[in-house]
Structure formats: C-alpha cells, structure tokens
Amino acid sequence: INNGQTTAAYMVHKDFAPILLSNFLDGKAHLQDGNTRKYAIDEHWKVLQALPNTAACVPRLGGQRVGHSSIEKKYVDYGSNAFMIIHSCKKYESRRLKQNISKSPFQYRYFIGDPTITEPIDNGVIVTLPCGDHYENLPHKTQLAMKWVVDNRPVIKYIFKTDDDIKFNFQKVFEYYQQILLNNIPYAGLVTSINTDQ
Image (tube, rainbow, N blue to C red):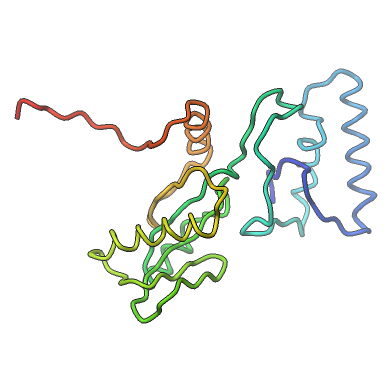
C-alpha cells in the first residue's frame, strides 16, 4: 500500500500499534491548530504506508455501505454497487497478470469458458463458465457472466463489462460511475454519431 485511504477496517500488529497511535496523535494536534484535512486520520497515516510490510487484501474482504456520509455530507458509494465482468480466455493468463486490476474500486472477476463443465466454477479471481472460450462464444459467455453476477451478487446495481486487454484510469472510471449513480442512468457506454443520409 502507498495510498490506502479510509480507516473503516484494518489490522495492525501490536508492535506497530504505538507507531500508528503516534501518527494519529500528531495528526490530531495539527488539526487542532487549524491545518488542512491532510492531517485527517485517513490521510495522515499515508506517510506510514511507505514502510515495509503494509499490504492490502485482493480481492477486497469488504466495502463501505452505500448511504449518507457524515464526513462528506452527501450520499456516497465507493464502488460497492458495481461489479466488473472482465472477459478473458484460458490462454490469456499473461494479459490478466499485466492488467493490474487490484486498484479497481469495484468487485470483479475474470470470466473464461470451458465447454467440458456443467456449472460455473469460482476460484475467487476467475469464474470458469460452462461455454466455449473462443471469439464466437462471446454472446453466450456474456449471457452466462451476467447471470453469474445476478445470482451471486444480488445487491449489485450496475455491471461494468470490459476485457482483459484494457488499461484503466480508475480515477476517471470511478468519477464516471458516480455521475451514472447521481443521474440514475440505466445504460452507459460509447455514444456515436450516425450519418442517416448515407
């Protein structure tokens, strides 16, 4: 971790607890002196994240509930209402390793196909679906992936479909997602202009 924010849930070794407490007290003193929010508890502890042995669990173990934030003074959703379907193939393991999806603000799974199975298999990162794993199988794979999300993540409101060869700017993706939520948009994607004269 080098930019982990929110103190909603974390685990600390007892030997490190005094160091963390000292950081919290230092931040509190600066805040009482009228300094900026960079000394807030979930900002000031980032200076400690440069130390060795700070890590995050991937995929995430939990997420903050959607609702009104007393700190932000507005309705917030930090990605818990969305799920990323990432189409892949068994042979594209190298693509998955290069994608660096760990910074995703959303829950996600890679979806591959295997026509020899009869039920989906979820290993926590990849869901293997009972279908072919080639280009011509994409419609069926997408249908089964959508069904898997609906069946296994019933509280999800939005499904974001993408591929394993995409490099993400997650800050932009999340800003876009917030606008979709704010405006209650049912479907979003690339808008194209069509010349109807041709």
